[in-house]
Amino acid sequence: MPILRSIIESRGFQNFVVAAILVNAAVLGLQSIKSLPPALASLLHIIDALCLVVFTVEIALKLAVVRLGFFRSGWNIFDLAVVAISLAPDSGGLSVLRALRVLRLMRLVSAVPSLRRVVTGMFSALPGVGSVGGVLLVMFYVAAIMGNSFFGESVPERFGDLPITFLTLFKMMTLEGWPDIADEVMQHHPYAWAFFIPFIIMTTFTTLNLLFGIIVNAMEEAKEEEAREKLAAQGIEVTEESSEMRLAKIESEVREMNEKLEQIRLAVLADRAAPAREERQPVPA
Image (cartoon, rainbow, N blue to C red; front, side):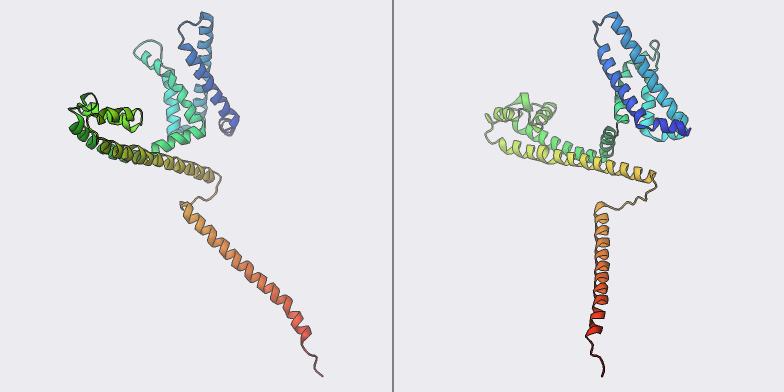
């Protein structure tokens, strides 16, 4: 078992799996072409089957090494589900699952640490994203009712009802063609800019930037958590102190070291000055 563990945890094995995923991605893309020669189609089918064998062997090795611990990782469960779907029969009630074999390409996310960190950060950001999304929905609903009341009669193709108004406001939030929408409305309502500009500032430049900040912060926390796990695996003590606390602790230790060095320096100077004072003392007659 130690030999198998060293194999599946080695960088060479992981790179081999990533290469198989990339090859499988190219094969699945080529298989979508309907006018392939029969010989090439058969070759692609063989390569696809070989890639599936590689993925199956990888899952089997992991199960043999970690056993029940395999199911403690969500990424392992995802890999197992993807491979199981790929092994579904071509005929019968489960044949529709074969169309989902393209999900094998998503294994690239679980195989590459940097991609895995991004997805982990996105999932950990869901609570904050949901809160910001709720605020954004309330703002959209209020703005949609106001826009329908203000401009519904004069510009019905843009603000005729709530669904159309929601779509118009979404287009404006993305800043895609919003000047054209504003110009069209301002032909009937010259002061409509007083509605559009605050809406864009509140949604595009405030709420969305807050949303991006939450996601970036979650990714940083995921990266820090991954670093903690690596340190813990190496037997290094990991604390839950914030970066500010750790910096303050380091500064305090440096300050104490400087004070001790200063005391040592003064003691050395005092020791050097003592013989000189003894030489200057007068000799008794």
